[in-house]
Amino acid sequence: MKLLRFGRDFKPDQQVILRDYLAIERTRLANERTLLSYIRSSLYLLLGAIALFQLKEFANFEYLALTALIFSVIFFIIGVYRFTLLKKSLKHLYYKSEEKESEDETA
Image 1 (cartoon, rainbow, N blue to C red):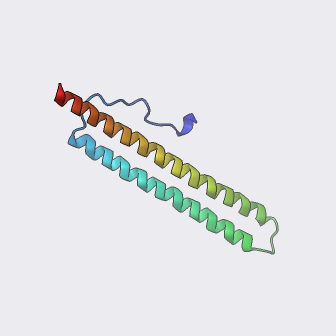
Image 2: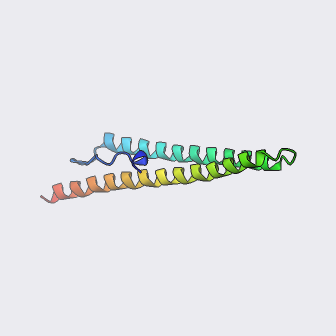
């Protein structure tokens, strides 16, 4: 899934300084906000699907409700997937720079 991949070509070549550490923290917090917005959108779609299922007079709305339910699940899965992907990437980036820093101190 090339569409969902990002930031894979960056390799840290120096230790993480304070400015970079703060940038990592901002990115981590932005990642959490993005996950929460995916969850919020998923819940709104779920509520819409439940409301459309409640309308018994309109049989055609059942298909729309089912579609909203499916998109709700898809939004939730994509949000969690992107969150874990970026979290692993940030963790790998931070720990790799920490390893490089410890190698520089021993040399």
